[in-house]
Length: 113
Length: 290
Image 1 (tube, each protein chain N blue to C red):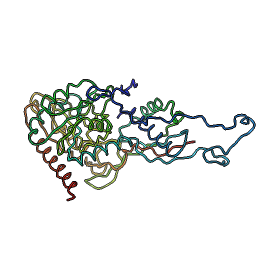
Image 2 (spheres, rainbow over the protein chains, first blue to last red):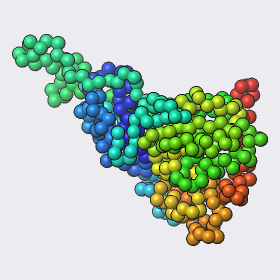
Image 3 (cartoon, helix red, strand yellow):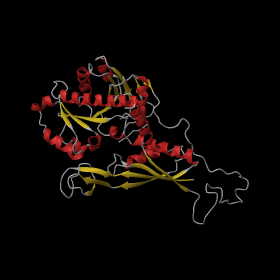
Image 4 (cartoon, each protein chain N blue to C red):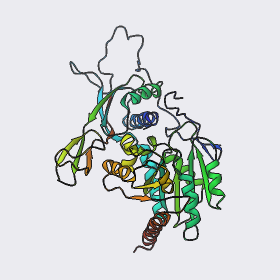
């Protein structure tokens, strides 16, 4: 996916929060990124470094919490962990998985001053 | 701006005119150094109560945690919801057509328009990095088309569509095709407010594309397998390709068709017509309260 757009959106959310919650400096940004989300983490870090210059987040550190992929098998009704969309159910071998977790791209919280 | 993926800011054009597509507020929040009200005494006094907490506890900094709990694409998603409400209120069935470059999206659109223009009003939003060649092909059919040039950008976003809707008169109870930039990766995560993403793969491509580029196949609601007329000249295993798509997206509906020769076009047009009638009927019942 387009990590520059994501980085700009991320900064926008931070700046909106700064207006609402009256803070002037961001020290740490905590993100939750699902393993299946179409985000290249290193690319996101690169672009966030580029867009945060001259902003209240210019000294901010990105902390990315990876959310493991999980799915439920529509065939055998069991839950399993998955790392790719094209995974088969480890129990019954069918390609009948519905993703239940791992597509997140969320800003969880900020450490601010 | 970007030398890795080539995305730029401020290079988006709609029908050749530049548009502002940055979502950021007009006045950005700038970095401020911590304020010191009494610089003369700063060297003599260490004040631990100036921070936002107004007090100090040993071992704790003045920093605080702010819960955000927002999607990174929250702004795009807000615009997408606004577009979706507009489509719903006006009975417009909107589709986001996504594929690799060269799958035959524009040819499919032109031939679909020829078949359906007498049944439903149609409008088209074309997305390309450069040129209005695709919009010109659509306009040649007599249907209104608006061209968005994304400059160096590799996908359409919901704000671009919102702006386009202010310029393009999409008829009520009609069909809106949004032809995204040919790109099998980036457009998958950007909701435009459409009802469905339709992924177009051609049989001149490779069977394992769904495995190699899974995000688009996962986010699509319908897959069109185009150029089926040239299958006798290809080493393409249709069942294998559909099987791979179903690994990534179990149950994904597939229509095989040839936009140029007409095979399968009836099934595609029937699907469009059924959805158009449903969406128009829903808008009508919303309006009348029944």
